[in-house]
Amino acid sequence: MGLVFNIVLAVFAATGSFLFGYDSGVMTIVIQSPHFLHFFNTTTTTPIIGAINSTFSGGAVFGSLMGGFTMDSLGRRKTVLVGACINLVGAAMQAGAQNLPMILVGRILAGWAVGVLSMSVPIYQSECASPKTRGLIVGITQQMIGVGFIVSTWVGYGSSKVPVTNSFSWRFPLGFQCVPCIIIICGILFFPESPRYLVETDRAEEALQVLHKLHYNGRNEDFIQAQFHEIRVTIEAEKAITAPGWAIMFKVKPWRTRLMHATLIQVFTQMTGINVIGYYSTILYTNLGITGSRNLLVTSIYNIVGPLFNLFFITLLLDRVGRKKPLLFGTVGITIALICEAVIGSQVVGATGSRRDSLSIAGVFFLFCVSCIFSMSFGPISWVYASEIMPLSIRGRGSAFATGIGNWLVSTVWSQVSPIALGDITYKFYFVFVAFNICVTFPTIFFMFKETKQLTLEEIDLLFGDRALGTLPDNLDDKEREIELTESHHQEPKSS
Image (cartoon, rainbow, N blue to C red; front, side, top):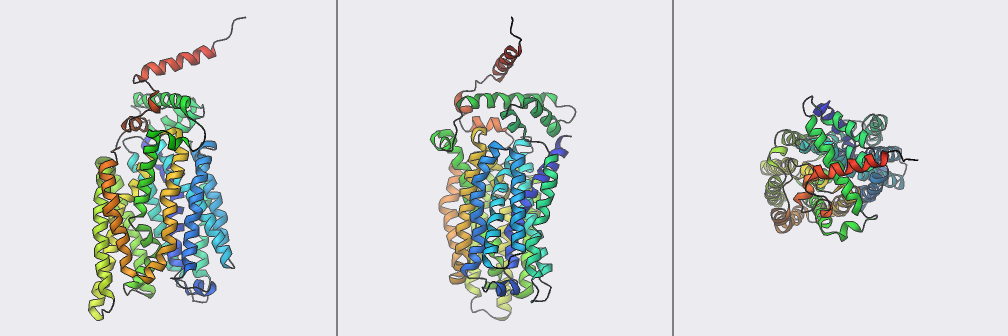
């Protein structure tokens, strides 16, 4: 089946990423519903709106951490299934909410589920991908997040056309979350488990079959056997030194370094300001003088642009140019766009007539620029880099920590603070992200991050200066023969 099956698996698994994008984007439209605001007695810039979004992100923190346990105990595939089941319950609660606590609990459950999915889907994709196409395969995560945002805004835009007295304007967009949940629940068991998890759980023959299904093209049997042997030998060596619990990630220096890289790439992604724009774009456009249905239309168009650039990047560039250069380019480009946006925001206040219209268009243009640049840098690469640099021994727990703390905890803070800041200091808020990108993100990536393109996950161990902490011999063939001899010895019948 080879590459086609690999892509089908990656796209299906990324239905969980679609939920990530849809759940994150749907509230942008919902909070513009007059019926929703009246029903819950609030406005778009109150702490209540911040709480609705921050409970989602807060739930995702704990969901990500929980995923660290289920990834190791249940496997990659069943962890995705667990996330979909939790999200189904949360979606139903939101759609049927009769009071604010029901909305908040529903958002917590949805966030919990998205936390599980956001850390498990990239790992599942990464462990199933060929090194030459891993950027494309894991980049599908960001692509489906973007598609989720698109669908959420257009579903919300269409639902907004009902009379203002009709709760359909917000109940249907929230209830639509159930659709991808059901798709995952019905389909995930038809796809194989990650070959690396199968080897780790002593199902080597099944793992070899999965590798054939994922990568065999009729003439690359040697590559598949080499991959299988490398995975097997590395895991055998890692099992000898793996310790239970979470503390080992911080005690062992090579693992601590890789955990730091994975966490930082998630933090840097949040500090681009992309989720502030995504969650509160309707407020940003209002500050630019764009209101009413025109505001919702611009938001819907905005969510289309990013995925188009992301698709171009992951299919044609990511596995060629690598990870580090696009991240540096993205940091510089996003910083410049945010500075321009702040300058324009400072001029909108007090402007009238055609000058205000021109400034509004320019403001929208630079927000779109942030999305385009992000989609060709931090958007896909944050998932690719964080998933591929984690050693197998701590891959579940490490990815849970990096995603939960680096992504969702930081997102929770901005979700709560942003609507208040955008209402009080408006354009000056952008300079927080500008300063961080200049002082922290760029120098850290430039001096510390490593290039990982087209390396196997086992070769990345060597890139970071360790392969199972040095317990794995350089000669893989010798070690492989040693394993085979040991197994044949155990299988010999005992003489009477």
